[in-house]
Length: 164
Image (cartoon, rainbow, N blue to C red; front, side, top):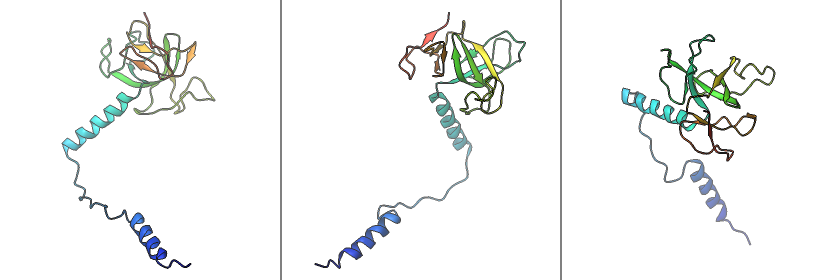
């Protein structure tokens, strides 16, 4: 039995699906960004960083500095310098290897040179001693890279530890 009515229905369905269907809404023309829009975008970017568990802010005043300020929020270190953004790439005991590449970066240790991040920057070693930070240390060398200002659990299920 021939079904000639199916072809027009199939064509209509394809048309509706490819065009967004009868519920497609018209979009308003894009308006130029305002100061309020910039604030909203900055807030969204901050929320995205806060959602990461591997971000720290560490003293960036140079290799000779011994202030060892490390926090989970931007600010000023104890020696007066601005804290720099960094992300954990590995935790070893109560120290972390961090990469201070561009904010938002997610690179890992360079497999060809363990002293560098994948983005080419030198890795820095920071100590969690006396910081009050809670971090994952699921073994002698942990790559969960979870740090927090609050106690809790790492995404691997281990309790976060704090260094004394």
